[in-house]
Each structure stands twice: as structure tokens, then as C-alpha cells.
Length: 587
Ligand SMILES: O=P([O-])(O)O[C@H]1O[C@H](COP(=O)(O)O)[C@@H](O)[C@H](O)[C@H]1O
Ligand SMILES: [Mg+2]
Image 1 (cartoon, helix red, strand yellow):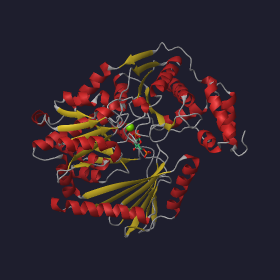
Image 2: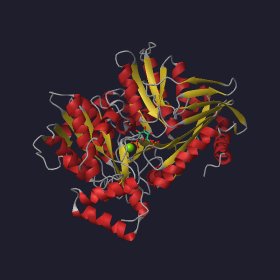
Image 3: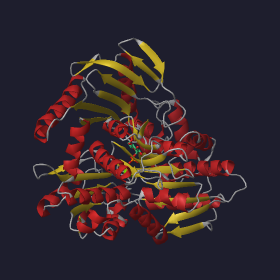
Image 4: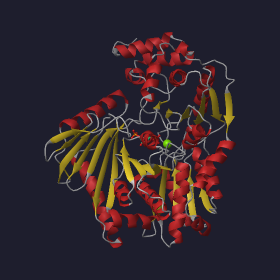
């Protein structure tokens, strides 16, 4: 073996070479050794895949830090062991779904077999299904846990493992670390029950689809407008993912008659290659470009695009110049929540004990709107699982209206406990119909919000830094920001810093530091720094928990007096975001 490898990498590599791993895996490892490919060996073995913002996520390949049958199997055995401890002497059921990625169906089958071999009953979706439907299915079928095999919107080389608890939420404390402890307690791959009895596996599909679709239809508010605006022109792209299984049928059930599906992106398999896009991520304008072009061609009102596991949705709408324009996740969340707040108000359902929920990196416009409606707004760490945690903690005390986050994830009502792009597509289409019925557009609604509450604009700067060296670099950048906080941003003094690693908030004007309360409401220790300036800018930096990236979120704001000022204010805010990125050297 090559001498330059770190001892922990050497140990892992030799245990894979000698343990009960298949011959192809061993040959691939041996080849890397023969080639002296220390970088790849290190990246593949220097750590175990970790539960991040959205479960396990990693490159598909050999090694403890990669997605393969062994890491998937070990995670599942650990989860099964934990379920057997957490719910002793109880019949246990789990639900499993998977997306259109390379190996997703194969991993789903392996996971199902392992649960079954551990005495746990499995409901396995018979084919591709959206992530939010899995969350719904867990609650519907009384499952203790569930798994979706997906790497969401990551590039095609990735796969992942989203793990759920009995309320339909992705696992949070204490279950996340308890599961990891069980996974770490597995000392040999022989402990994973790969070849067990698969008699406890039941296939599910159409019957769950029907109940899920009926649930979404029940969320509808403006039935009259829907009836009158059947001709709203919608373009939909599933980006080769699972959204195709439900969104077109749902829009049709809602009565929409002018829906165009981008057929070349509707073939979900594409062998997991996502052949027509660089990244299957609706956050990327490139991914949305075919749908946007189609919308321009047919003069559509609305573009919807869902990611491969259909929990996030990107939209484009006609702006005040009649041009199709992409909205960012903060803008979509703001319009959606505004629509819900008004609907609850009009129905006389706002009594002071309702709430909305968002993450700390999501626009503060939502806090401002909620306050105006006497609705509580809770802020959690990044990760929709934390929004779900707040819903659970508030159950029976306050009513959840809806939630959203900047990364294109939204939820309406609490029957699903993860971001739900299927229900969001329905609600966004509905509110577009509602606006059109009043002679307006969704974009007009957004401008109205800005006029009423202020123009909030947020830009995201992501820097990709791959492998162990990239991860080290990201940690160093965070340490530098912590040690030397910026004094000003775009000329305005930084007056406060929140450090979620230390759970402290520091007021630079008074020089005082106090604790941020943790332990509940979606707040725990996390490597996140936030800076606030005198003129209302919010700057956040954190390492991504799903991709090899460091993320910088820049939020700026200004008043908007009248619609005619929109373009100028928008341009000024965009320039300000750019200037902040440049002055901090973020490239
Ligand atoms: O990737 P998804 O759609 O499953 O979504 C997951 O990851 C996103 C990106 O997280 P990070 O910034 O840590 O990469 C989070 O915003 C989201 O809450 C989480 O559910
Ligand atoms: Mg996703």
C-alpha cells in the first residue's frame, strides 16, 4: 500500500480489501493503490458518509465516504437496530421511495431487504415517487420510519439517503445521533443482513397517490378563480425526475386545461444522466431554460420546474414588462405565504395562535408580513427537517399555516412534514389563477408585497471546494470570518454577529454577548455565522450540508414607493449584493 496515506485511511482501505466486500469493489480499490491515486483513496475513505442537512449524500462509488451498497446497507442496519431499540415489542413498518438517479432503484431494494430481514415490515413504492409523497405515506400508513433514495438536485454523480421518523419528518436530534451511534457500532460488514428474508415487503403505489392528490386538492382556497381561469397557460418541467408521476395529473384534476409538459425532460430515467441539463436543479437558470423558452414561445403565464425528487420547485412568471422572469426561492416563498396569510385572514381563521416557519437564511420579508397579520414566524437552522421539528413542537398549541426556505422549498399545511413541490405547484398555479382573475399576475402580487413591506432582495454566492482539501479550505474560511468579522458591508457598519457554533449573539455597539437559546425550535449548534448591518443588510456564511460548497447569503433591502421605481430599486439592490460579494473577495 502507498506510504503517503493517513493511518485512518490505510486502516479503512485494508479492512475493505480483507472484509466481505465483492470482488469488483476490491479490484477497484487495488487499482487505485496500483495507480498511486492517493487523492481518490483519501477522499473515498477519510471519513464515513455523514448525516448532513438532508441525510446522507455522496458520490456514487467505492469507499466509506461514498454511496454504495455497503454504506447504504450499514446505514440501514444501523437504522433498523435503532428502530428495534426505540420501539421494542411493537410491530414496526417503514416506507421506502426512490427517485430517477443512477442506482436509486437498486439501493431502494437493498434497503427494503435489510429492513425485512430485521423483522421490520416495508412498504416499498413500486416505482419512482416524489419525496413529499413518502413523508405523506409514513403518516398515512402508520410507519415508524422511512427512507427516500435520492440526492435531490445534486449532479448526476451523486446519490443519497433521506431518513425519516414517525411523524414524516427527516430525522433530527436525538434520533439522528442515536442512529449514527448504531451505525458506528457496526464493526463488520457481516453484521449487515443483506441476504435475509424479504417476505415482509409490500409494494405500494396508486392507492397512496390517490390519497395524496386528494389531500393536495383539499388545500385549495380559490375554487371560483380556478373554475374561471382554466386557460391559465402553464409550462411544466420535471427535469427528468419524479414530479412527472403526479404534477401533470394533479394540474389536470384542478381543472387546468392549458398545461404544456416539456416532453424531452419528462422521461424520468434518462438512465440517471439528466441528459438535457447540466444540473437538475431548478435554482439554476440553465435547468429552467427549456421551459422558459417554451413559455416565451407560447406566451405562457407560469413556468414550474421540479427537481429529481420533487421537493423543490422553481418558477418563472411574466413580469411587469410582459417578459418571462425567473423568481428566486425567497420571492416565491413570499408570494405563497402572502397568499396563505390573506386566505386565512379572509376566512376569519387568524386568532393569534397561528404560525409560519422559515430558516434563518430565508428572507426576513416573511417575518415582517407575518407580524402584520398577527401570525408568529419561527426561524430555524437550514434544513426543512427543522421546520418540521417546529411543527411537531407546536402541535396542538399553534396552527401551522405554511413554511418556506430560500432554496426553493415550501410546505402548505401539516399533513406532509417535508418541503412539498407537488402541493406547491398546485398552490402556485392556483394563486396565479387567483391573480389573473383579478386582472393581475403573480409578479404584480410580488410588487404589491414590496410596496407594502419593503423591497427585500437576496442573492446567494456558492463556492465549490471538492474533496478533503476543499473541506479543509471551507473550514478555514469559516474560521477566518469568525476571527475577523467584517467591520462594514457596502459602507454600513456591522452592528451584530450571530454565531450558531458558539450559540452566541454579539452586539458590537454595546460590546455585549449573550446566548442564543437552543435545544428546541429548530436551533442547535451549527457552523453558521450571520452579520447584520445598520442599514438592514443580513450576511450569512455556512458550509453546505449537502454539497462540497461554502454558501454566502446576502440579503439587502430598500423601500419601494411606487411600481414605476421597481426596476431602479431592483438594479440598485442587485448591485449592492454584488458589491458585498466583491468587497469580501468571494470568488
Ligand atoms: O437538497 P434538498 O432539496 O434535499 O434540501 C436539503 O438541502 C438544502 C440545501 O442544504 P445545504 O445548504 O446544507 O446544502 C436545504 O436548504 C434544505 O432545507 C434541505 O432539506
Ligand atoms: Mg430535492
